[in-house]
Image (cartoon, rainbow, N blue to C red; front, side, top):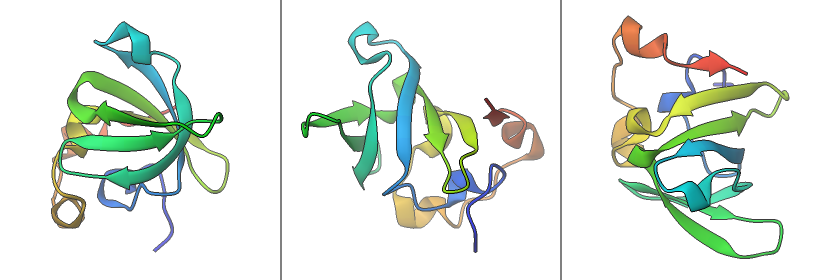
Amino acid sequence: MAITPKNIVRHELIGLKVRISSSKNKSLNGLSGVVVDETCNTLVIKTKDGKEKIVIKKVCMFDFTLPNGTVVSVDGRLLIGRPEDRIKKKLPKWKLSELKNV
């Protein structure tokens, strides 16, 4: 199944380009790179300089770049959960409206 703005929350995030558009932790604002690992509450982002940063999902807004070049903004709170369980999770339509094409 191809990754789209509507199914990004239930899709595999590893390998996607990401930028943190806003965060409660101001030092993370603007951080960008590629998602290299994911846990229940964190994303590991490899930056351009080769460093890996561990980012807490619930305090950030992420801008993911899909393989077709579309940029989708996702609230990190929608991504909380083990990746294998998040795939099965059903989201109410009002939650899907929080996904935005940037």
